[in-house]
Length: 109
Ligand code: 2BA
Image (tube, rainbow, N blue to C red; front, top):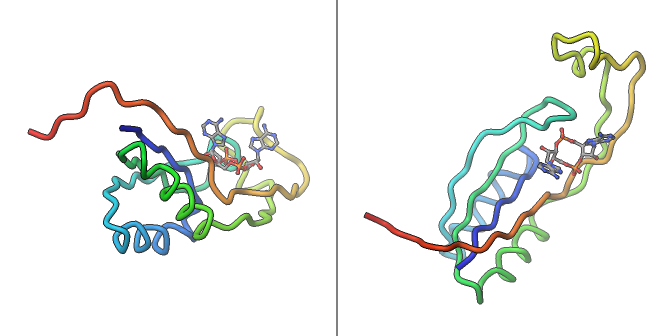
């Protein structure tokens, strides 16, 4: 069994969630924040049998798009002068950042 951790953009979250439900794949969705943009993204925890990991990766690729995002000085201000960027910067975000971890033990009580 593996744990797939997928960090995706909020805009893709509902579509991705629906695709997982259609394929009968269980997941937990967490609201998260990117350390760089400091804007919201969504992190999915998906516990899945080894032989279905590829299916999950395919669903991620089909439902999560890469987008250009402009970082404005205002939105990059985290209340800390060190993080101030004095001009707009374009960054490419996503489609998804994915980690696949081995699961040592899995219980449901
Ligand atoms: P953020 O940290 O908000 O990063 C958003 C996008 O900004 C990144 O897209 C990347 O294109 C750019 N970026 C991040 N750090 C940068 C830096 N130091 N200099 C220049 N550009 C930078 P993605 O790479 O697609 O990442 C999307 C989100 O996935 C990230 O949001 C973060 O929440 C997560 N993530 C990415 N790599 C990660 C990692 N190694 N560990 C944990 N989370 C990660």
